[in-house]
Image: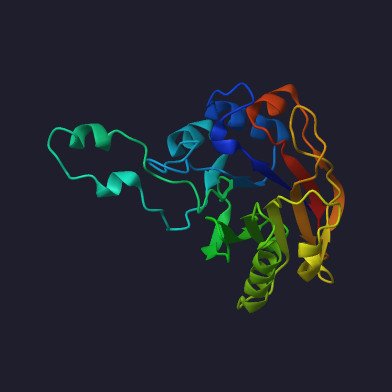
Amino acid sequence: MTLTVASFNIRKAIGTDRKRRPERVLSVLEEIGADIIALQEADKRVGTRGAAVPHELIDDHGHWQPVDFDVSHGKLLDILPDHPVTAPMMGRLNTRNLGWHGNAILVRKGTRILDAEALDLPTLEPRGAVMVELEVDSGPVRIIGMHLDLSGLYRKKQVDRIVAHIEARHAHMPTIVMGDSNDWRPDPPCFSAFSGRFRLADCGPSFHSRKPMAALDRIIVDKAFEIERSGVHRSAAARKASDHLPVWARLKR
């Protein structure tokens, strides 16, 4: 049985045309047809901190459901007084986040979710990761979505924290780690903790979407899986939807 996974930094649904088009993000994901998707920059960073791709739009689209990590960030709106004049307007704003520090996971509708958790990572800037354990046709699988440190100072500590969390889980199950590494090197030293149990899917350069030169977006696969195929999704819609192209891998267990 095969499982298709994908990772996409959607840049808050703002495309290379500088327009926020969340429906365009979903169209690109539909082109890929993945069973499980890790998103980065899936929430607005300031203000309402709401989802860049609203929950209602995902529901209407019908293919995927977002994993609920039962966490949210503080919002600027939280410090505003509950005034009878402004309250109705505030109630219409989208303040419901999709993930944790912009990391979100979408799964096929009907997929059984066993457990889900948001992870704090050591960092100088707001960063985190998310984890979900699922029951799929080929058996249980653990997915971790991440967005590593931009400066590079904390990437190794962040990967070490992720691997330590995997090893501390009460149930052993095949694990896939996906996300934006923010590392331009072909074999990032910060990935040393993944050696032994994991290997990198050979997806290719995904940044910048107009002229891809850097393989920033990675899929790290448990050796319990065979990587049948992997790559970068380079459609015309994908080139316009974000400054990153999505990466994908088809796995067999």
